[in-house]
Length: 109
View: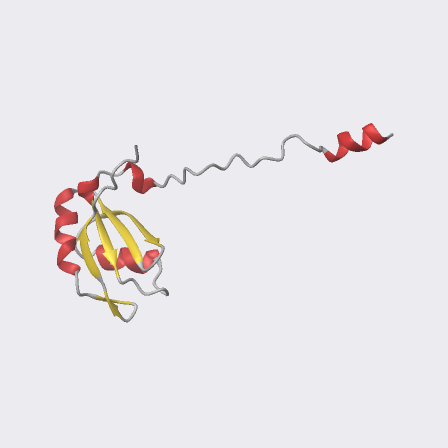
């Protein structure tokens, strides 16, 4: 009877969620030249509001709010990403945002 109960409960097997440290986002697959870094993003700002602002300078393909008041916006072309740099100083969520080129992190050895 006890072994039957164990089988029903499924103890020991199939409990793992398969989650590792690799939190891959579509941003990882987009070329660096097509992305801009956005700083001083107010906590209340949504990705949709961010995207709406940046669509004024080009066709965005992705917008993501990251931790610590930072965001990333990706464009269809590198030219549109370069044009987005002109939005630095624009107001979003009651704060002046900073816009700069996206720099790729060096790979860890």
